[in-house]
Amino acid sequence: MAAAPRRRVRRGEPIPVWRQIEIDLTFEIRTGFFGPGDRLPSESELAKAYGVHRHTVRVALARLADEGLVVARQGKGVFVARRPVEYAVTRESKWSEFEQRLAARPDGKLLRSSRRTATAELAALLAIAPGSELLVLESLRRAGPGVSAYCYHVFEHARFAGIDEAFRRLRSYTPALAELGHPEFFRTRTWIDGRLPRADEARALAVASDTPVMVMSYVDAGRDGAPILFGSAVVPAGRLRFRVDSP
Amino acid sequence: MAAAPRRRVRRGEPIPVWRQIEIDLTFEIRTGFFGPGDRLPSESELAKAYGVHRHTVRVALARLADEGLVVARQGKGVFVARRPVEYAVTRESKWSEFEQRLAARPDGKLLRSSRRTATAELAALLAIAPGSELLVLESLRRAGPGVSAYCYHVFEHARFAGIDEAFRRLRSYTPALAELGHPEFFRTRTWIDGRLPRADEARALAVASDTPVMVMSYVDAGRDGAPILFGSAVVPAGRLRFRVDSP
Image (cartoon, rainbow over all chains, first blue to last red; front, side, top):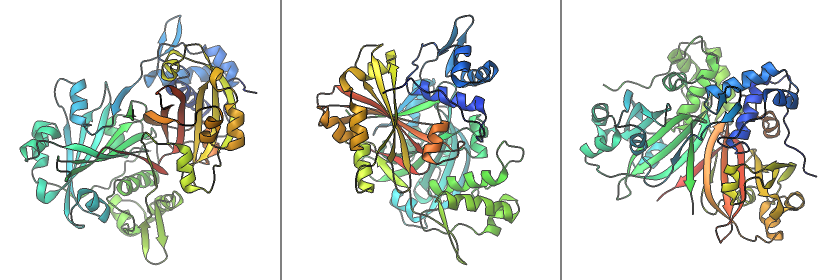
């Protein structure tokens, strides 16, 4: 026989009880059991359901509010906020366009560039010889209201020398690649994974270093199918959802 | 001028230095700067690059080995392991098929079922009336060698009464839905996000409660496009990558 939804915490876990409640409510909100505009159960109802003090619930709710998942309305209760921005993964996906939907103009910021040697794996993705010199650009991009993406873009150095200077000046890869003779590029393959942020990423994205990030890696190619770049975009989990349509 | 790759830790962060190194090397491995079969720099090279004691590097490398990212070969060094399994997101995506590629037969385990009331959001996804009664099944599925998925499946109770008993018996949704008169279903929309696991999820998936998980939510529909279920699959980050092809 189907039971009522279970609200439960475990003592003695490495993460504190208030954070377990925060994670539990995050699950209920993100899964849609509480939708945008819905009122959450009251502090005392939640305290009773979880078997904890009201103060513990209050800490969890404050954290959810900090993360933008809920909004407290004085005297009315705590309500689920609007859903985060969606990033649709398609052949046309480009951070530049996503950014321009949100901002008046491109505002990518080049953080640093470095050299690497192509491993067999990266060489295969870029269709170049293993051992070729790579140019790796790190940049900070807009990825939604108040949300940033920490991006890595990997190019064959021989073919794309100067892309760092062009990106620094133009603040977007679309015009920078056009200047280098690649007016068109398309997403061919995307991988999505998660992890904890590197210290540099956490600082640039303004998130705690124990907050999970999502990593979207991808290969962009020209109209002829020849790979142009391998990219990897790091965004704080929960601030943006990736969407794939398969109608 | 492009510089060499930077290896650096920050003191005074909420996460310890050895874990920062682990995260940093995880980034380098997963991004492909070290590919499968490549040898990592030696313990003393890494200790020098990060400015830490060799013991700190050793702890980070041991953790990477525990997670299956690297393999130490006696006297030869530490090598990058094979890539994790990929889960391709397509119209044909089904955990049942993914599971059967990996296991001889379906082995989904029903953990519990509960009732919920459809919020406006879930009602819209399932094309039912808000306030309808929902049946929520929680199950544990195989999701790769040594990796499990904690799955939530949400059905309209009125149309799918008995799906819990059918799944418990058949250990897979494909035959269970066929019994209920839905021999075919297809993925129509997928969302991917990340968070920390709920206590129940961490326990069932055998991961630490401070290890990020990926959440793939989706709507499956019949050939006529009518929604059948809303699902949400939780997998430990790094154990499986979602892949989207857009050729």
